[in-house]
Image 1 (spheres, helix red, strand yellow):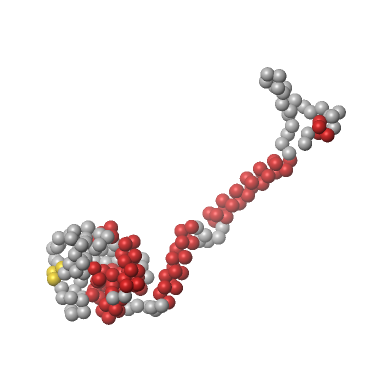
Image 2: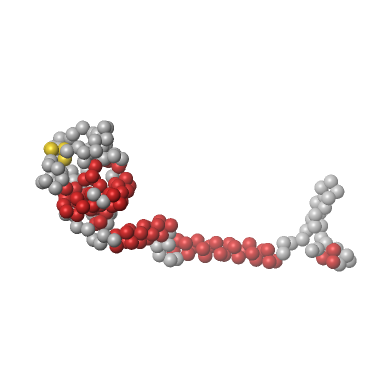
Length: 199
């Protein structure tokens, strides 16, 4: 409240401007208001420094990656560490829950080359009986792990959890014979292979 209202004998300074007979007082902002403004600038500088240099791995991406890793750890507690052998791949090929998990890995990393249904785009068709680098079902895991064709198929060993490799291999094995109708024609070097488990 203005001192002139509480003390009518005090004269407030005017700005000296006159707009249609209206004059403005030349009162400074309250001190607490100025300090709040200065404090917000100081706080923002400290906050920016802390956000970029303070606690290590406190970004949204790091938090997300930690949450995904923890979720994966909890899921994999149920099945332990899987081996990329024929028996394991064929077993999980029949388990709908884990085939769905393998499908999610495939959808995230493989569809750009192999198509959403495994029908093939840049990469080969995974739904027919003609395979180039695979002679048995465990070869799928080897190709996913180590890559193939001079890195045309990249190696995923360092980018996927070993269980993810086994489960995506089970999903890829389950695609065989689905024939989505828009499959990529055979490429050079592809040959028919026996049914899974009969190699």
